[in-house]
Image (cartoon, rainbow, N blue to C red; front, side):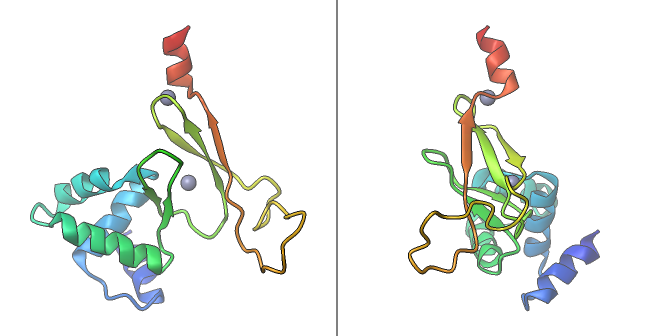
Length: 140
Ligand SMILES: [Zn+2]
Ligand SMILES: [Zn+2]
């Protein structure tokens, strides 16, 4: 498993380091977590890693497109390793839970703009907002 992650780093010419492997592994097992959660997960493995180191790793992995950063309005940024398939997200207004929603039309970008203004569009980002099952149960 770890060798898969090392492969991913090499494929984008990033040096394989323990913090990078730990961040990738944390996000693979826990999609859509915020930075603080990533730090906590990585520290379970590497207790001495600094906040700054994790921030730097997240930035490098995001820049290399191994990690996707999602920023639902009004929520803290979340990270995931499911990249390049242009999937969307459903977000709970109450607790902030996030789940994946496959691309509406199956291809990226899944929403054809009515007027692309001459841009070459490669991604359409959709956030569905609502109430998750846990929260709607609590209310009724
Ligand atoms: Zn909820
Ligand atoms: Zn996702």
